[in-house]
Image (cartoon, rainbow, N blue to C red; front, side):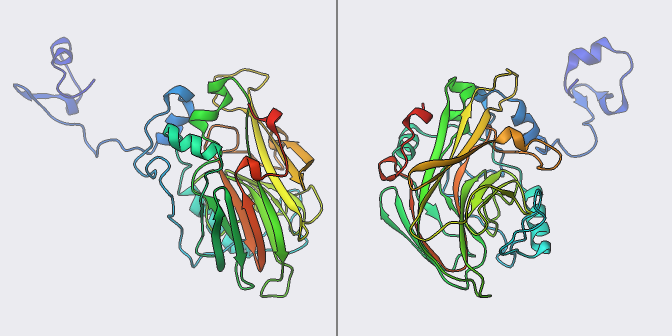
Length: 341
């Protein structure tokens, strides 16, 4: 019952103190502040794709060039779930804890439908990327759908994200379109140098839901997955040691990563799709895994990666590396037409 509803007052002889009629047309308001929007995320989880709620006020405008970054004093941690640590480089544990706290304080953004011209541009590879503050080096646009980056030896762990999603949940989800959807991009590795500590530098690639801490590689935090080139392991919401997957990356190789969403075999009222990830090397598919196999006590969960949130391309670097990223389909070595729609 709401304050000011006269019919309720007329029907009930006794009312709680907060609703006591203190005079004609006067009602005492309930105590405390008005309700907030803390439960926005939970509400959005239950909403059908075709009627996503308006993004909460702490979201950026729909598909704004999101360049808000965390405190640059923060840095990253090591990997460890199936493996307790990486056999190559590991970052400080306390910085992993800081990243977890950062994510806990920032819910994943609520999906919304993009404008048609923007959506069509992304399908053609019209993607720009965001240089994070932790990245020491140069990033430049070679041509539409193609970028080149070179990090310096002192560059710490960082993630370069696409400005726009490669997968728009409110537009692409199989739970709405009733057909599969694949997001994919490639990276050519031009050079792998060293870190400032003398270790081998490396590159990682994957997908991330926003917001994501800019000092963390893809796969280390919630809403992300990645394949790391230094140890060849795959990481899914995993800030520990990852799982063995492929051999380390080499200079001269072109690697690619894709995620395909399909309607799950067991139909539910959830917005979540079935999702599988594939990895390519020099135009050939060389590895694939089902994200549902991550759903166990050891591997953790796959929050943000089941088709119910937008996914952005993520390229992680640490140390001195040089690369080219391709988002336009005509620039890929791998052709996956039958995987798309």
